[in-house]
Structure formats: structure tokens, C-alpha cells
Amino acid sequence: MTRLHDLWLAPHRPLFLGAGLWALAALVWWQWGEALGLAAPVLGTWGLWHGHEMLFGLGSAAVGGYFLTAAQGWRGSDPLSGRPLMALVALWLLARVALVLAGLWPAAPIWLIQPAACAYFLALAGMLLREALLARRWTKIGFGAGVLAYGLAETLYLRAALTDGLPDAATMVRVGWMFFALKISIIGGRMVPAFTLNWLRQVQSPAPDPAPRPVLGWCALGLLWLALALAFLGEETVSALCLVGAGIAQGLRLAGWRGWRVRANRLLLLLHITFGWLAAGLVLVGLARLNLVPIAEMDALHALTMGAMSGMILSLASRAAAPRDGGPLRARPTMLLAFALVWSAALLRLSAPVIAGFDAVPVAAMLWCAGWISFLAGYLPTVVGPLARPVFSGPRAAAPQVVQIRMPR
Image (cartoon, rainbow, N blue to C red; front, side, top):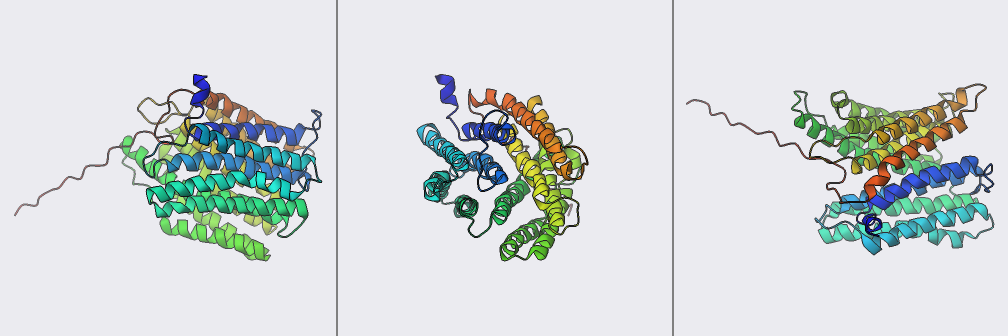
């Protein structure tokens, strides 16, 4: 009983665990469900349920785990725990059940599915807005507002999938992955250079500090928002060019963060690679939309979903599960294997359309599942026991001392 109680001491424990379990279960069901005697859920089309559960199932659990953990630092409060956390996780599970029923029961009315699917987003947004208001951290209101926008995107996705209404389902798939592209750009754009600076100071590296390059960051965000708006308006060509420009801007940001200097810190190196997936994925999706590469846009999206989104989830969960011994966070071997398998699956899935005579999709699915099994093997033991703080970072390096030199008079 005591060990089970430990699961509910902090939001990242059950929510990252739920994300990992669902990444495995939903993919197995979608890819091999019929072979196992289970009817494959269909949300409008066979692929829309799969896309929904990766973007709004797996993704929403990870978003909740990260945002609620970050929120505890706004006013120095204890993390969400106990029964309120259980209630939030129950709402996430209710949404998964509702979408499975929607997929297995095509005649299910949307008014029956929609409330269950959106309740989690409303509760999560309310918790984040409450924390921001109590802490008087007005800039943090954007966390709750972002979750509300995420929930609105899911509402429109379901409407498009279940009613064939406008906007169409393909547009809403774009909205779903764009949410994560924006969040990775914002969160990763702050986390990667900050953690890199801390590491370089810890090891007393003579390398120059990482260059934040805020102008490039704002340009990338602006281009991403513009690409999203133009996609809604049907301006495919200009939207694609904006995505390519955003990817190039993100790549230039990454180049200034001294990633080659953190080779000894594997968790940090993997965070750099995750951001690299974001930059490369944006360029690839833009080129696919312009028909300049031999793969379709929906195939190219796997660079952002399997590469960047999954990489970010694994990066955050791996840091939360890292052993704490007073030094820099160290990656567990099972976590390193999880990254390797999931990203191998992403590369194989991207190459599937151009590999003649070989069905790469089932192999990519097997690699994906093996990766999340490896993740669960490393993460499960860390959801019990004392709660380590801070969750996502190790000890900070001492600030460099400023030596004042008096000039002789």
C-alpha cells in the first residue's frame, strides 16, 4: 500500500507512466489488434484514431506531467498529489475509454464522446490557471491558455473525424502536431541552452557560453504560427515555405548552443538531438507539402511525432527518472536504449515510402514498441520511493565569481 501511495506523490509519476503505457498499448492495438482478435478502433478512418491517440492521448499525458511539475515552482508549493491527482488521471483514462468506444462504435453520437474527451483538458487548464493566479505569475497564464487551445484542437479534430464537418481531418492533424512543435520550440528553446550553460560551468569548460539567439527563436515561432494560419486558409505553398523557414531558424538556434561540447552528458546530448529532430522535421514536412521530396506530408510528419515529440517526452521522463547522487544527472541504460529504438523506428518509418519491395511499417512499429518497453523498464522502478527535487534538473553550477581589479592610481 505504501509503495502504491508513492505513485501519487507528484504528477509526473502517473502521467509519464500513463504516456509510456499508452504509447505501447495504442500502437499494438492499431497495428496488430485484428491479428490478436481485437477490432481495430476507427475514428472516421483507420489512421485517424491512431493519430488522435498519439497526439491527444500520449501527448496530453506528457503535457500534464510536465506542466504540473513546472507549476509547483511558481509559488514554491507542494506538487499536485493524492486524490486531486487521482481524479485528473481518471479523467485522462476516461478520455481514452471514450475514444476507444468512439472507434469501435461508429454510430456513437459526438455529444456523448466530446465531454469525456475534453474533461481532462479543462481540469488541467483550470489547475494551471489557479497556480498562476495564486502565485501572481501573470506570464504563466499562458500555460493554462495553451492547454485550453490544445483541448479546442482536440474538439475540432473529433468534429472533423466523426461528422465530416469543417475543418477537415487533415487540417486538424496539422494543428495537433503544430501544438507540439510550438511547445518544443518554447520549452526546449529555454531548457537546452540553460542546461548546457550549467553543464559547461560544472565541468569548467573554456568554451563560450551557448548563444540564446532570441531573435531566431521569435522568428521561428512567428513562422510556425503563420504556417498554421495559412494552412487553415488553404495557402499550402506559402504555409510550406514558412515551415521550411521555421526549421532553418530552429537549426541555426541549435547550432549556437554548443551541442558538440556536451558529449559526456548523454541526457543533455539527447535533448540537443531532440531539438534537432524538430528543426529537421519542420523542413521535411514543408518540403513534402511542396512535393520536393519523395514522401507524402503525412509520412514526413513522423519526424516531428516519433522524432521530436517522442524525444521530448523521453528526455523529460529520463531526467525525472535519473539516479540522484549529488552530481550531474545520469541516463539509465534502459532509457538510452529507448531513445535508440524509438528514433530508429522514426528513421525507418520515414524511409518506408521509398523502400521498394519491403513493408517497413510493421518493423518500425516493432522498434517503437520495443523502445517504449525499454522506457517502462527504466521508469517503473522510479515511480515509488522518495520524491527527488528538482525533477528535471540536477545541481546547479556555482555562478562564476567576478573578480574586481583596481587600477593603480
